[in-house]
Amino acid sequence: MSWKNPVQLLFGLFETPPAPLRTLPKPTVSIPAPVPSRSPVPAQEHDGWRGLSDEVVFEFPPRLRKTWRLIRRRGIWVCQLPKVFVNAPLGVKQDLLAWLRAVLHPSPGSRAKKKQAQTRIFLWMAPHNPDTLPSAQTRQSHWNLDELFQKLNREYFDDALIAVVRWSPQIGGLSTHRKLQTASGSHHLLTISRGYDGPEVPLEAVEGVLYHEMCHIAFPPKVGTGSRRHVHHKEFRAAERRYRHFEAWRAWEAKHLHKQLRILRKSAAK
Image (tube, helix red, strand yellow):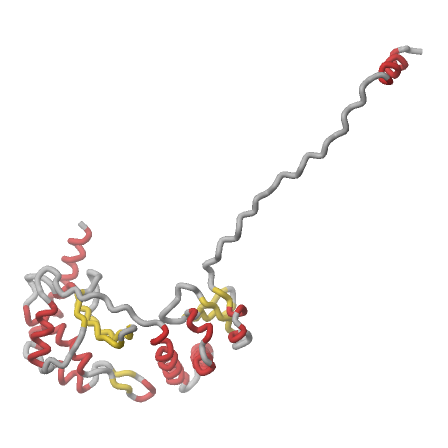
């Protein structure tokens, strides 16, 4: 019999018992506050839109302001609307449903119904989302649009037209007329392509395009059959041809405008 084990047992009776194990505290985990989401707000948060349509889900993206859009996402149709629609009246919602039915289920006559509903919706939206009138930029490098506008207004329109005139902010920008609804009322904005500015452009050309856009103010679009808008209608065309250099302007435009724009793009790229 070995004495090793009894001796170890005897010594063990006089040993200091080990200290009890302490339970370490659990580490504190700091959970950051949730970051506000910029994703579209689902319509389910607004009772007025709950169950409005069985086949379309409505969302209100925070950055959408001027129009609405219909997209397909994971097999579901989603209609994204400006937040002004959250408290839209019943008539606007009905017009929107009519617009959606015309888009998703086209039929004879649906195109006209779509345009009519769209027109009423935009009329309702206008006062809720006023446009911002840009500042006039009439002096570029050669032609002064304000001086030319005043001259044409006096010669052809008896000084009856009022508009903000500017050069296009883009190199390849088009010449356009827009009627803006701002907080102070309605305003006409004439934007002229920068391809018409430069010493190589004859006076009759830049006056011609400016006169064309001024005619849009004096002779606004007409509504034809099926709510179709005629912009360059017969009366407009007749007035446009009263510009004494009409043929010279159109000839220069067809032959040289694209060259002027190409030169501007190359200069900007350097």
